[in-house]
Length: 109
Image (cartoon, rainbow, N blue to C red; front, side, top):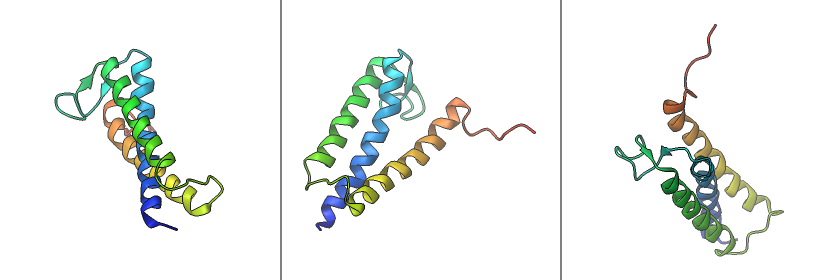
């Protein structure tokens, strides 16, 4: 097992997961945070920018998963590397975007 392939699957999971909120918000016609906004990551970018950014992330994720090594969905090490990338970026995105969309507010009692 080549450890570089596992690193690639980890980052592939991160890129594929990051594609989701940008692509969905963009296709819904909604502005959303992106690295191209002012300030980066906090300001809103147009829906078109988010569709393009989401698509770019999906292409990079695909290339990292499908073109580096031979990804086997039944190989535990491949799935763990991919899943860890998905989980870590998901938590990061939830915390980051939650600041702007009410996801990090404490529950009312």
